[in-house]
Image 1 (cartoon, rainbow, N blue to C red):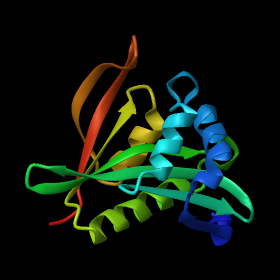
Image 2 (cartoon, helix red, strand yellow; image 1 turned 60 degrees about the vertical axis):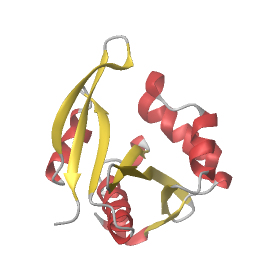
Image 3 (cartoon, rainbow, N blue to C red; image 1 turned 120 degrees about the vertical axis):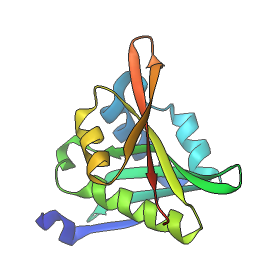
Image 4 (cartoon, rainbow, N blue to C red; image 1 turned 90 degrees about the horizontal axis):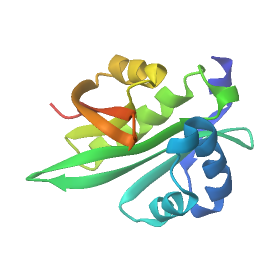
Length: 156
């Protein structure tokens, strides 16, 4: 994991939109968020957008938001994307950990996300990080593109 020595995690901005959208399309093809939606998330003051840079290249990114649920705050991970050539190097874990740290600092008690049932690598990453599958989401992404909702308690 020598690449992590050169990895820098910092806020992603609207200036990064084109490359983030390219990575999103590479990762999720037909389920990819539209460029306009990524732009809205990047510009929304209620979202947290982080990019992972290796030297001058964006290797991946994560976008999440803080939502009020009943009397508590919850973090929602919208997307976690790692460029194919940078996978299996710990970058996704680094981004997820940093987003959870920010959520916790802002008083978030639980974090949730959705993932495709066929995305075995992502489901395994989340399981190892303490996420529990709590709901099945039929046709969540598209007809036949089922998902699962996962939840993790951040504060004890």
